[in-house]
Image 1: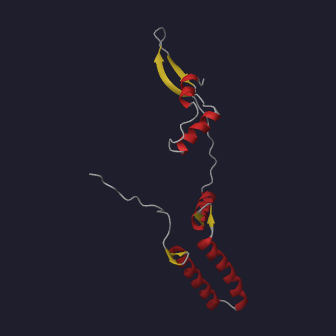
Image 2: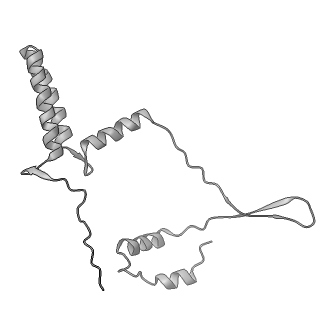
Image 3: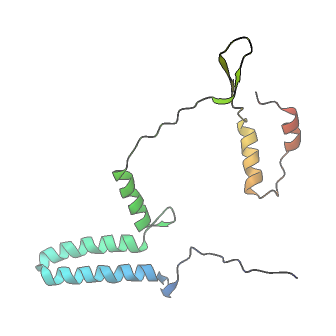
Length: 152
Protein backbone atom coordinates (compact mmCIF):
# COMPACT_ATOMS: atom_id res chain seq x y z
CA UNK A 1 0.00 0.00 0.00
CA UNK A 2 1.51 3.32 -1.09
CA UNK A 3 1.21 6.09 1.44
CA UNK A 4 1.40 9.44 -0.27
CA UNK A 5 1.88 12.47 1.90
CA UNK A 6 1.43 16.04 0.83
CA UNK A 7 4.50 18.03 1.76
CA UNK A 8 3.71 21.69 2.45
CA UNK A 9 5.40 24.10 0.09
CA UNK A 10 6.20 27.77 0.71
CA UNK A 11 5.60 27.60 4.46
CA UNK A 12 7.37 30.93 4.90
CA UNK A 13 4.90 32.78 2.63
CA UNK A 14 2.47 34.96 4.57
CA UNK A 15 -1.29 35.07 3.90
CA UNK A 16 -2.44 37.99 1.78
CA UNK A 17 -5.61 39.84 2.78
CA UNK A 18 -5.81 42.93 0.56
CA UNK A 19 -4.09 42.40 -2.77
CA UNK A 20 -0.36 42.14 -2.06
CA UNK A 21 -0.70 43.28 1.59
CA UNK A 22 -0.21 40.62 4.26
CA UNK A 23 -1.82 40.47 7.69
CA UNK A 24 1.44 41.59 9.36
CA UNK A 25 1.78 44.58 7.04
CA UNK A 26 -1.86 45.54 7.53
CA UNK A 27 -1.55 45.48 11.33
CA UNK A 28 1.68 47.52 11.23
CA UNK A 29 0.04 50.16 9.02
CA UNK A 30 -3.01 50.31 11.32
CA UNK A 31 -0.80 50.77 14.40
CA UNK A 32 1.20 53.44 12.57
CA UNK A 33 -2.05 55.20 11.65
CA UNK A 34 -3.11 55.16 15.31
CA UNK A 35 0.20 56.77 16.28
CA UNK A 36 -0.30 59.46 13.62
CA UNK A 37 -3.83 60.10 14.92
CA UNK A 38 -2.53 60.39 18.50
CA UNK A 39 0.14 62.84 17.31
CA UNK A 40 -2.55 64.89 15.52
CA UNK A 41 -4.67 65.10 18.67
CA UNK A 42 -1.81 65.83 21.10
CA UNK A 43 0.49 68.22 19.17
CA UNK A 44 0.17 71.50 17.32
CA UNK A 45 0.23 71.39 13.51
CA UNK A 46 3.96 72.01 12.85
CA UNK A 47 5.04 69.44 15.46
CA UNK A 48 2.40 67.07 14.09
CA UNK A 49 3.90 67.29 10.58
CA UNK A 50 7.35 66.38 11.89
CA UNK A 51 6.02 63.54 14.06
CA UNK A 52 3.76 62.22 11.28
CA UNK A 53 6.67 62.15 8.81
CA UNK A 54 8.88 60.21 11.25
CA UNK A 55 6.07 57.82 12.20
CA UNK A 56 5.18 57.17 8.54
CA UNK A 57 8.79 56.48 7.53
CA UNK A 58 9.29 54.05 10.42
CA UNK A 59 5.90 52.40 9.83
CA UNK A 60 6.49 51.92 6.10
CA UNK A 61 9.99 50.59 6.75
CA UNK A 62 8.73 48.01 9.27
CA UNK A 63 5.80 47.05 7.04
CA UNK A 64 7.28 46.86 3.54
CA UNK A 65 11.11 46.92 3.56
CA UNK A 66 13.02 43.64 3.33
CA UNK A 67 16.73 43.28 4.00
CA UNK A 68 18.32 40.20 2.37
CA UNK A 69 14.87 38.67 1.93
CA UNK A 70 13.97 38.98 5.62
CA UNK A 71 11.41 41.44 7.01
CA UNK A 72 12.82 44.67 8.40
CA UNK A 73 11.68 43.96 11.96
CA UNK A 74 13.88 40.82 12.06
CA UNK A 75 16.82 42.79 10.66
CA UNK A 76 16.26 45.53 13.23
CA UNK A 77 16.02 43.03 16.11
CA UNK A 78 19.26 41.34 14.99
CA UNK A 79 20.92 44.76 14.66
CA UNK A 80 19.95 45.70 18.22
CA UNK A 81 21.10 42.31 19.48
CA UNK A 82 24.47 42.86 17.83
CA UNK A 83 24.81 46.29 19.40
CA UNK A 84 23.95 45.03 22.87
CA UNK A 85 25.95 41.80 22.78
CA UNK A 86 28.92 42.82 20.65
CA UNK A 87 31.77 40.39 21.27
CA UNK A 88 34.98 39.65 19.47
CA UNK A 89 35.30 35.96 18.78
CA UNK A 90 38.71 34.67 17.78
CA UNK A 91 39.22 31.17 16.49
CA UNK A 92 42.48 29.58 17.61
CA UNK A 93 43.50 26.61 15.53
CA UNK A 94 44.82 23.81 17.73
CA UNK A 95 46.15 20.37 17.05
CA UNK A 96 43.92 17.44 17.91
CA UNK A 97 45.29 14.90 20.37
CA UNK A 98 44.33 11.50 19.03
CA UNK A 99 46.02 9.13 21.48
CA UNK A 100 47.83 9.18 24.75
CA UNK A 101 50.14 6.23 25.36
CA UNK A 102 52.55 5.41 28.15
CA UNK A 103 55.97 4.27 27.09
CA UNK A 104 57.24 1.05 28.60
CA UNK A 105 60.71 2.45 29.27
CA UNK A 106 59.58 5.52 31.10
CA UNK A 107 56.67 6.30 33.34
CA UNK A 108 55.94 9.31 31.21
CA UNK A 109 52.97 9.71 28.90
CA UNK A 110 53.49 10.55 25.23
CA UNK A 111 50.98 12.53 23.22
CA UNK A 112 50.65 11.62 19.59
CA UNK A 113 49.29 14.49 17.57
CA UNK A 114 47.79 14.13 14.13
CA UNK A 115 47.61 17.13 11.85
CA UNK A 116 44.38 17.74 9.98
CA UNK A 117 44.57 16.98 6.31
CA UNK A 118 43.28 19.81 4.17
CA UNK A 119 41.57 19.28 0.85
CA UNK A 120 42.62 21.43 -2.10
CA UNK A 121 40.18 24.14 -3.16
CA UNK A 122 39.36 22.44 -6.48
CA UNK A 123 38.38 19.31 -4.57
CA UNK A 124 36.21 21.28 -2.15
CA UNK A 125 34.46 23.14 -4.98
CA UNK A 126 33.76 19.87 -6.77
CA UNK A 127 32.38 18.26 -3.60
CA UNK A 128 30.17 21.28 -2.94
CA UNK A 129 28.84 21.03 -6.51
CA UNK A 130 27.96 17.36 -5.94
CA UNK A 131 26.15 18.29 -2.71
CA UNK A 132 24.35 21.26 -4.26
CA UNK A 133 23.04 19.18 -7.15
CA UNK A 134 21.84 16.44 -4.79
CA UNK A 135 24.16 13.84 -6.30
CA UNK A 136 23.04 14.37 -9.91
CA UNK A 137 26.49 15.71 -10.77
CA UNK A 138 28.89 12.85 -10.03
CA UNK A 139 32.11 14.81 -10.39
CA UNK A 140 34.95 14.49 -12.85
CA UNK A 141 37.05 11.53 -11.85
CA UNK A 142 36.07 12.12 -8.22
CA UNK A 143 36.50 8.50 -7.19
CA UNK A 144 39.87 8.24 -8.89
CA UNK A 145 41.07 11.38 -7.13
CA UNK A 146 40.02 10.05 -3.74
CA UNK A 147 41.89 6.78 -4.31
CA UNK A 148 45.05 8.26 -5.88
CA UNK A 149 45.68 11.56 -4.13
CA UNK A 150 47.21 11.65 -0.66
CA UNK A 151 46.38 14.93 1.12
CA UNK A 152 49.29 15.10 3.54
